[in-house]
Image (tube, rainbow, N blue to C red; front, side, top):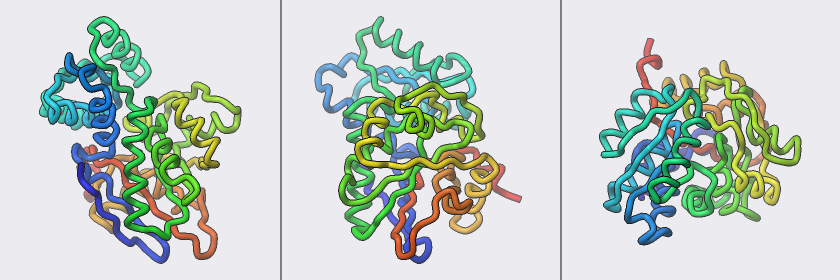
Length: 286
């Protein structure tokens, strides 16, 4: 895995550039951990479902470890991600219009074939692998108080919040149109939500993972919401000021600071995880 860099973005503000990870997101961390932990159980190959990034991470890990990969994605998955999956040697199956439908098809396929099922976000090995983002960040910015990161199914939040428990707080940032963690915390349990956001290709899970919910409650991880217009503006800001071409879902974390959805206390040290870059950058120009 790559140890991704951190850059200072202001007084008491850092960006963790995880979009520079293999395949353009943090996802290979969890995929490698899941496959390696399975040992011979992965020899026949793996099956996963994804909005795109988890599939890319799993396909990369599978290729590096010499096992076949079958990836189910919605028919709405961005073409840049589908092309990437095929380039990594994965067999791609496009099913349904939302992640949940691809997930159900992948689960059935894994049961039929006996291949290892790699969940995009709700398996202990996957969450633990994503937690290495937090461990790296703590080594790079030991004074960090708060980490802002985007939440879809919650694997990244689960791993990072567990890794930083007792040392730094994690706040999940979600599109207002896909409030999986926010609703779960309000209702005391994971619940299904609608998926209506410009960031749905990356943050398209309709329910927070059970592991993420449990970790969020245990560690006191917070949740804030941002609108699509703020997400679009934050994505453009990252291009205009940093020349970082990122996904809309990734930009949600920064949008929380721009909109005041999250307001740091005086002197608070904040790091924002820039988690994914698998996007069509053509709309960033002009």
